[in-house]
Length: 240
Image (tube, rainbow, N blue to C red):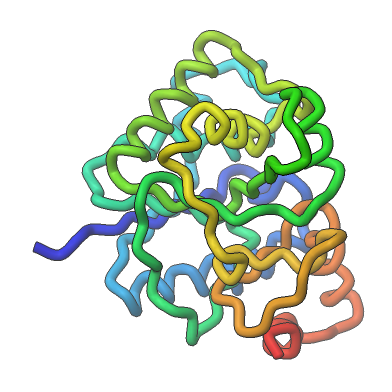
């Protein structure tokens, strides 16, 4: 029997925690469709969450720093499923048409963020030395057992209001999970979550997934539109 893959994305409310109305157009018309096309090509199931199960179940947005950050947390309410593999992809990620099929997935897998303020805060508040990396939650690969474990862990923290140290974000939560469960964690190559706009990012040719991460990524999306630069043309140039 072939393994079953579920790719989860979110488009709740305004659709992005960092951008504005200008940012939403390419997210909905370019980036999410690129993920759908990728799933169709390799026979992965795609699930776009458009209504907040979190809001229906928990009502109050008093766990993370802002209401919109709770929508990022929403993913974990869908990780407890019967698929062999669960993959989460932020909606500001573009997948190239010639992207490779998903790699072998074992445990939890994420891409390291380039060294920056978040990684420094993470190590400081958790008393870690400089050898500890900080990982980006925007592309997350899990096998079935790990997806269920991760869902249970996150919901327990939500229901008991165990907020993350440092930045009160879903990304910091995931990195705390990695500390506690490092034996089931593996680092992904950055071709699966390429973040060239972050400071200290190393250039990589031919990435599979391109991530317009954070405030900087959304500013670039908007600047491209203001200058009437075709986003798909821009993405092809970056790939080279």
